Image 1 (tube, rainbow, N blue to C red):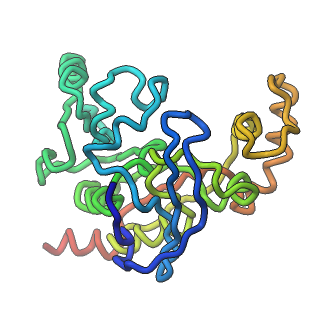
Image 2 (cartoon, rainbow, N blue to C red):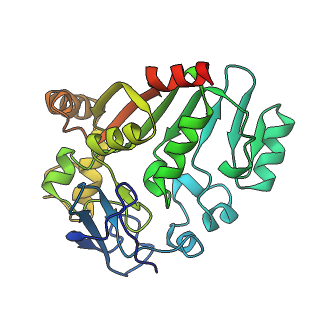
Length: 266
């Protein structure tokens, strides 16, 4: 385990917000703590498993690593890089890289291996930024490798969401190392000369049922939801999503005008 300072502002001052074990996947009975940075408000898991340790905390059926056990040992596999043509990506598994290369998709084993001159029209991170040990490395990568008109699409859990307001401990610990709010993504973007093009929150009804099933919420949701029930819950949640209380968020980023001008002047 390692104790870390705030990845966003560098402060070592923090206060505990929630403590829990892995109640969702039951991969461990250890207790982990979510802290809030006193200076900037970023929430993160502290202490946390090191990069060498984190793999053993992923349940065997965890979707993000379900296909290849070796992938659980490292978490650089968190960035899909998509150029207009051809496609490209970052992938730690040698076998997966070989398969993708055969399919005509360029691949690198980690961010540092991507040539500095590469530029991409679209960078996508789907429910992965919360897993990485240093989000700032990924925002730095986006700032350096987006093309002038390129965009980055980030989807992560929203710790301002309704389910976390009802149950702050309703998170995937310890595999989620960061617990972002919309303002955190904006703060990271500002640090690296990125602008928010679009931001919205949304919710999946299934999250509430799953949380109730493991005792994190009252058992008021049916064990099996019909399509009609799911649609009714979704419609009920829509106004909350529009208020920023959705359990997940999608943020689209681009280079700021100042950064684009600096690039043209260089």
